[in-house]
Length: 252
Image (cartoon, rainbow, N blue to C red; front, side, top):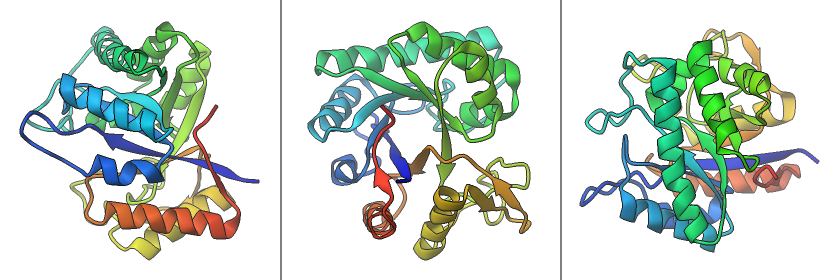
């Protein structure tokens, strides 16, 4: 039986500013990527998001970012591999502490936004992230873009990696995501998004914007909880998987 993990970026509120409906979408996912304060999130939000995840049997992951609250972590910055290692270890350690306090453990690390996209292509930055995940110990997994430099870096560091794919993002012929600012970057039609997911999970490939088919190893699927209609989309995905006999579970 084929299986897929459903992950979602969560805990992205900050102080009085609220983003996403974490409580509504949590029952439909299997892994939560908890913002750690550098692009969104604060101590109280981390605590509550971890509590929600544990209550719903959802794996707790850290979602570290470049230090960019104003830009929501989506602006590229010039950072060294040593800086990236420190940023990832620091933020993941915060989420790990809250997970431990809630009687759970840190399951995985998934970089956010610009850091994720930079490390998908830059081997040195990917090595820094993989090194930080390795030093967290306890079998923490690395979630990274399927087929990217992050997957190769994880192999070099002896870290177990899970290839991530996206339902609501289009792909380039090299397997990278289309930058958000470009036409066609976001897939807004739910049927088209579900069809893309099923192709990736069942056939191991995705059709890029150019029309070329690109191989992908789909281990985890990202849902964006802040997108309009996120809960309805999550429901539709779960129904599609059930109808095709595809199991939904976090990587053990």
